[in-house]
Image (cartoon, rainbow, N blue to C red; front, side, top):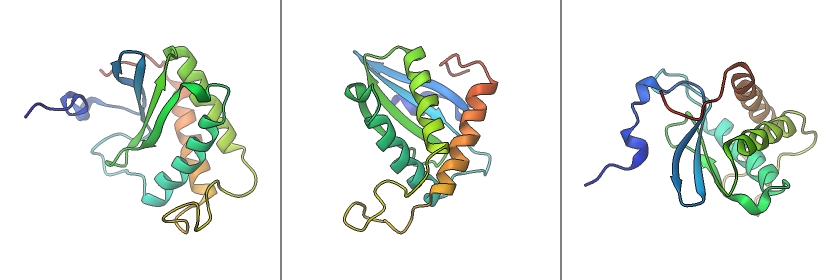
Length: 150
């Protein structure tokens, strides 16, 4: 059986940051690595779920909404995948930072927090999403984003 692309990257060398995981035609998969793999510091389900609701809603309502294919958490609890169509890495980075800022500054209820909107609606917390997004934005703002795994 052939390994999938993400299993061919040595996770012991991945740091927090933003990476291009793969390119399929005009679709780019970004590895939004919010935590260092295999170090014991993982997002809990509440945090992942909350960021997913907020980020997915904001990015799909951005001026680049027609370019968004998918946003969702990694099962390993160390980040998220964002799939976009026809956006440059610079445009994608700008969009990601903009969405993170919107989440950090969001007032009011978390998106999709009702029983009829979500299969685990009680497992959401805006503050948890804001803390994780601020943490990740700090990483993106303090390091050069090369989009390449080391």
